[in-house]
Length: 170
Image (tube, rainbow, N blue to C red; front, top):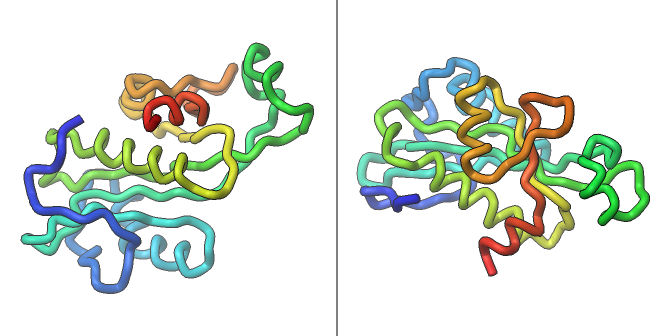
């Protein structure tokens, strides 16, 4: 993972950010940032964080975090044995992650993923894992490359246990 080659900040989305010019190549992710992300933040549904190129006044990328839960029976048996006998356990959902086309190919997806994992780990709210829903095989491969594992029988839903995230930041 490399640091951005520009002066940057990672911060909560706010009305001062230029969302109109963001283009990642996936219309649904572009539209979400333009039209829905601010509403999700105000309604406490998801928390969007943006990677800003300070000098260009552009959003280079963004991701969202939200609370979710995992049905314990959906986890591998070896992991279930280490958890309390609750039907659900808390988790953090990394709902969206996108990089503007002008910034793609610079490792910024991995950079934002690490930031999202760090924020999830540092949260004062308990979560046993970070969960993602990969939209396609390329996205799935990205998350698997970074240590995520698919839920048994769920090809595109993946998780990274907080115990592994904690090791990364210890």
